Image (cartoon, rainbow, N blue to C red; front, side):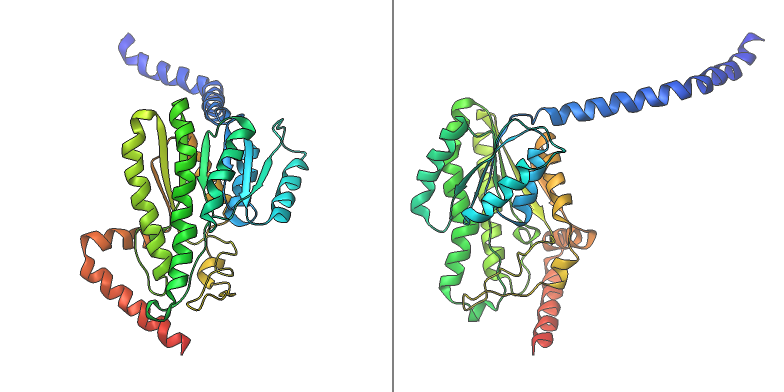
Length: 313
């Protein structure tokens, strides 16, 4: 008889405990979640391309978690603006004053010099975010080779040179995390983006290789591949002649917010993710199609190219 009544009594006990158990569970989970972010406190973070767009947003995101920032970009005035914006935030308690350094990845000769200055600021770099980049719009056959070279310099060779300059320090400390901001177009090539997609494909390949080679040094590598982000990237994109594109693409306007992408990147650092794809379902489907059913993927890209070409006529 006692067994018959045990089940209802047990359910009564559970129901009575729920008002206590649920808040306690939420509290414990939240505490564990926040503790993971606390690991970022006082980490030295180097962000390239930090004077605008995603880089500027990343600066705010990491600064809010107590990181010591080293911000680089081509414009000292814009870097000063970002620095002052960070220091003026009353909602953040961060004892680490951001440092700014002018760095133009096109000028390869200055990368080593600036890197030594970077390492001299806090004595190390814990997290390197290779964010600086330039986009491109144009027909491959009508694009000057100088444009291909410039895009590759910024998006690939500049990132690689900076990484190689910072990496020995990370290996020495047996600690570090390198973030490469690639693109969905580093996995699939789309029409009228030849120079850009080529540079991002190269970036993906280099950092995938680097991840395997340096894992025993306890240095981590994460490649982030976002879709379209609501920044000025398309406005500043180069055309085949080398001039600025100067148009805000509809796809860019309807893309992810920089805040969302920055938060996702912070999560990737905290969770030690090796690869992050921030893209809608159709982009992920295209990535799969490229490898599973390439003929169909190529046909889709041909149709897209034909449609875009007719719209420009």
